[in-house]
Each structure stands twice: as C-alpha cells, then as structure tokens.
Image 1: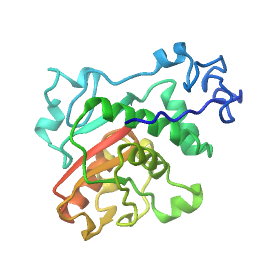
Image 2: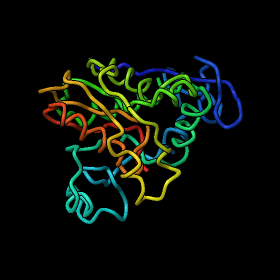
Image 3: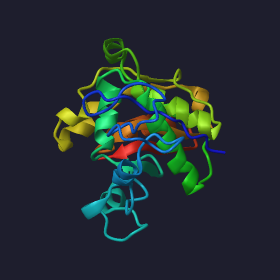
Length: 240
C-alpha cells in the first residue's frame, strides 16, 4: 500500500520551506489535507506520457507509441527499461535543483514519493534491490549527501525493497554531464563505476534524480551486469 509523504512549506523564494504548514509547496496557497500541492500546481506537473519504454525519451524521439525509439533500436542500452515519473520541466526541475544544490533534503520525500507512486501505478514486477547512482567521494564531501540515495530511500521504503549503496561506487571523478556536449558524455562516464559481487543473480533498479542522455545510467548498468546482475532497469524522477 502506497503511503503518501506529505511536505508543505512556508514561502521562501520560488519554493517554500517548512514542514506540515498545510500550504502548497510551490505557490503557498492552501493545499487540501494530506496533499503537498494545491490542485492547480498538481495539474501543472509535467507528467511523462508518450515515451520510449527503453530509455524514456519523449516527444520527437518517438515514432510509434510503446516501441523503442530509433536510438535504442540502433544502440540498445545495457538496461532493459526506464520509468520516469516526470519530464524535466517546470516546476519539477526547480524542485530537483533545490534538492541537489540548495540542501533541501526534505524534498527527497516529496520526489521519492511521486516516483514510488508512479511505479506502483505501473504495477510492473519489482526488482530484488534498489541501487542509487553513486557520487564520487570528492563530490560527496563537497555536497554532503547523495540526492539519488535520499530519493532511493523513500522509493525503497514505499515498495518494501532493500537499498544497496555500499557495493556500487564511482571510482573516478567525472564532469557533470549537463556541462558536456552529448557526444562527450559517454566517454565521460566510461568505466567510472565499480560494483561488487553482491548483485550476482539479482534484478536491479538504478535510481537517479534526472536522466539526460542516459550514459550515466548505462555505464552503471554495464558495471552491474559485469558483476553478475541478471537484469538492470532505471527509475528516475524526471527525464530530460
């Protein structure tokens, strides 16, 4: 049974701050009981619709609904499918940015709750374990937390799955993918991850905040498969 996580806040810039005020997280209007957003802001969320089942690409990348996009047919990724709760667009992009860059850790409850709710609505068979995309130790020291792990905690709690973050490591620092042109992103994360034998024979779900080109998820999926994972899928809050 899905447990909805509530997070309402007082006004602070574009995203409000403070727990359980009963106000909409985005606009500070009164929110219905047990809801994080008012009805207008809830309707404004850029939910994923017509998307590639393999990489969750949407819009012009898709030719036939339910069929993998041309890129996935030509160059199949190591993961078997991708589930994204939203498109990376306003206002979800701002929520993710505030979690990722402004120490708004409480937003992981909201975003993780939306992702878990989306996954439950799909009613697909569940994996054996959840693996958040790891940060390199230097980035983790700088930021103080891994936003993907924080999201994964709430997804796993809701779906009653274990989280294994200890046996997946980013072994070299990488430039943020958003700072690179598309053709350099694959090289940037090539052999950036190391995973352990704990994943042998397991069906794994990678959890991340945003998927852009998909190269980061693919590099981690390749490492998991080399470690003996039976299958790898990707769960993200938003797809760019």
